[in-house]
Structure formats: C-alpha cells, structure tokens
Length: 324
Image 1 (cartoon, rainbow, N blue to C red):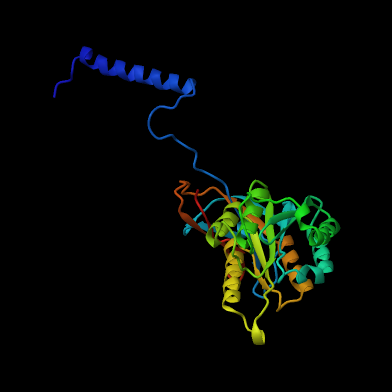
Image 2 (cartoon, rainbow, N blue to C red):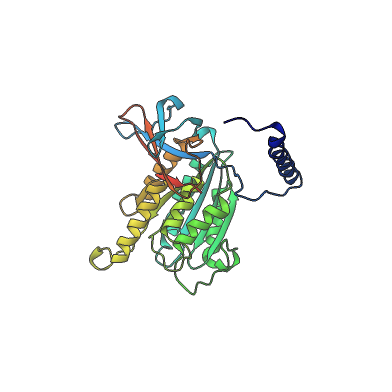
C-alpha cells in the first residue's frame, strides 16, 4: 500500500503533540487525567522468625546465607537480615482482667517483673493493657517493670482511672478478647519499626468484640507482631474443659501459630518456665525482609515460608500476610 502524503499525516502528529501538552499541564497543576491512577504497589515485607536445631535448642548464629525465603512457593530476594540483639523490641502485655483471670497476675507478679528485666534492653520498651468490656492502657511505653506492676495494682483498685484505647464502642458486659489484641496492634504497634511481640494472658473466650478471629490474625500478620498466648482456663466439674474452653484453646493456639509465636498452657508449665522460654525466644530471634517478586496489592493471602538450608534446622515464622 502506498504511503500517505506527509500533509495527511500532519493532523495526527499535531493531535499527539497537543495531547502530550494537555497531560503535562494536568500533571503540573496537580490534576489527574481520566483513567486509573498508577500507584506504587511494592512494600517491604518483614518477617520475624526463630530457629532450633535437631535437639530443639535455639540457634543464635544464623546468617542471611543460611536461610531461604519463599512467597507462594516462589523464591524471594532477601534485602534485610538482622539478629534480635541488633533490633529494638516493642513489647505489649495484654491481661484479661475479668474475674476468672485476675488471680494469675496477683500470684505471679514477681515472675512477670523478672521476665521484663530479662527481656527489655536499653533500646526496648513495653506497655500494659488490661481488658474486660473496656480496654484500658494501664501503663504506656516504659522500660520499668516495677512501674508497670505498681500501676497494675492501682488498676485492680481503680480501673476507671486509666484511659481507654479503643473507640467508644458500647459493650454492656463481657470480655473483648479480639479487640484487646486488635487495638493493641493498630494503635500501639503498627507504625513501630523493629521487633514486635504481644503476650496475652486469657482463656481465649470473647463475647463483646467488634472484631473477629480473622481480622485479628490479619492485623498481627500485617504489622509483623508475634502474639504469644498464655492460657489460663478455669475448668468445669471434675476438671474437664467445657465447650467454650475448647473453643478458647483453639483460638489461642491459632493466633500464636499464624503470627509465628507459641501458645502456652499455664496449667502445664510454671510461670518462671514459660516466661524464661518466651524471653529466650525474643532474645534469639531474627528479622528478615524482602520486596515481593509479585508486588501487586490484590487483597490475596500470600503464604510465607522461611527455610533453613540445613534441613535439620526447624524455623518458625508467621504463615503469611494479606497483600493490601
């Protein structure tokens, strides 16, 4: 086909030229052209993990070259790797202050104080939240275990003096287990860098939260917060668990597993033992980060797997996150 004369191509060239000027002017003036906006979809994903050898002993000498990282089965390039000693820790203690749970902190105040001394370093900090049908900050960020315990005793006498953390939701009665975790993450930890962990002392039962199990897990995974669950369960007749007890057990087990932490049954382990176990894990953990090879934010769940190249080493990390 013969080519068109130059003067016939000129209007198309001219239109293209003026269209470019219009788009440039819109950009300069802060206006957006019609059509979908282009947004950055690449976020650094951080993952906390612990590693144990074949005998179950924690390992504190791994390097970036000792592990492999996968998202939905695809290998990822590690861009950040650090040991726990190099990264500050933000710790939250969440205490179920309902009547069935109040005995635990009264009996184990000394163990809790020793734990805080073991865990909190010069760059670390912790806060304390107590909940029933209200979520109250008993102690904001501090490095003093003694200060937290003193305020805990004051809370036991005058709980209404302490500020609430959640929106003013109406809760006539009950226990807001999920909300206590959710708001501790979103209000106190979401924008904090470094290692982040929550210890929640409860039986896992909830009857007054505005959030549920899945939104709570998603919040923990998104913010890279380890949720250690310490379960204190009042048994029924003949020492047997009720149906609600079994439900609470499953909830606390899943919260810990999905976030990369551990679940503890307080009836099977003495307080000084589980506090020591958690302290050792927090002091012997790692932070690893990557930019996803498939970065699009499409609300899908991305499965994460951190593996040691030495197959005898067992790694524990969160199971994934939602790409939002």
